Amino acid sequence: MNIGSVSVVAPVYNEEDNVDPFCEAIFDVMQQLHLDYEVIMVDDGSTDHSFERLRAQAGRRPALKVVSLRRNFGQSAALMAGIDHAAKEVIVLIDADLQNDPRDIPRLLQKIDDGYDIRSRPTAVSSSAASASMGRCIDSCRSSPTPSARASPSCR
Image (cartoon, rainbow, N blue to C red; front, top):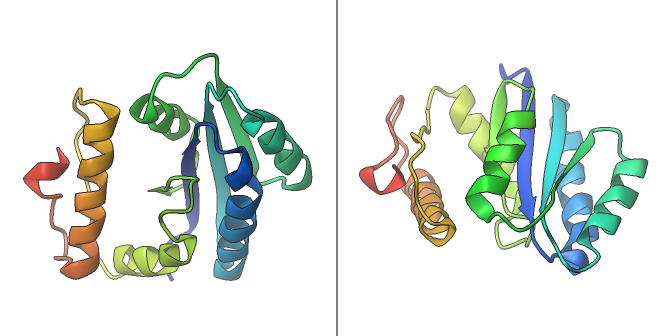
């Protein structure tokens, strides 16, 4: 694989029960790739114990960066905060609720390495609209990626 480094960005909002299983899954996948990587988890003003669990994980995992937002700003803002802290060549966005399987990341990176490109330009949309658009982009990529194609209009 020609990809040199990867930042994984995951927003977290009231996911205290998912933090440990997500970290276990994402770090298992990333370690198997033998790439330079970082995982950036953004606590979006959680009111449960998500932040404490993230801090505990960060104490055990040097590649984990934890960003904490002072209140809930929404998924889009949390993703942007993570992207702003990302320092690697490729950025992968994934939710920490485990609805997306971290084991799909190697396939996504392989497609990028093969010359496929997924892009989206930022717009002001609600977090639920952004989430739906992201899902459509990912579904579109899974079913029929096109080399060097821009994201579909629904992903703007």
